[in-house]
Length: 283
Image (cartoon, rainbow, N blue to C red; front, side, top):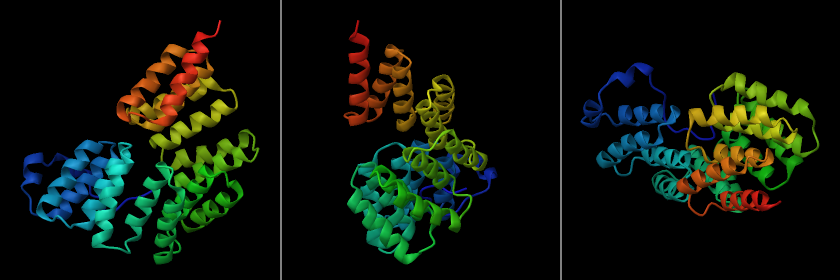
């Protein structure tokens, strides 16, 4: 399984049975960090941050915990704050490709593409076959409308790791943007075989289904994403947009409002809500 950024190891599920009190009193920062990562993988971002904070109380310059806190903040859509923690991690380890990749991904989501590319390129200088960074560069190029170039990097990401589910997803999106038909869904299906509970991939598949007018199916995938991660900003936006397409304006507005509760001032949510209100007001 490949995520856009993961720093540190994975622990056995059995560790979950350990009590919070026992872990918080532990001097084993590796254990605390790994427990935080496990909680992150379960979508429990606030709980994960608590563990990373315990590590940072013991070791304020722990680069893995700083980077992982950035990762969890990104999971909450708090990308500006995430960048702050990535910067602290890079102060400790300036050439850490995992942290460089994580900051690059956060910068993409902040629309700071030039800076994002700089960080992803630095990660790739350290590790030219780093699949997650190659995939994130493809993701950024998709955002910039450079779909042919995006596919080149996504293919490199998949050469480095054929199970990079997000690279498969982004390649499907790039091909759709280049005029591909419903066959692009095969990339999303392959991605979901690898990561069936990835909320981003689920809602991306929903968006592609919506692009082909398959709105009811699209809603099903957005709902699956939100069952896994109820605060997923992309899924909330995508479901709101699909509900707007279906003429279900009140429901659409509720989803945009929920996104604005999580991320006040989110320009996509504000635009989506205004569009739904305008459509609702039409006779």
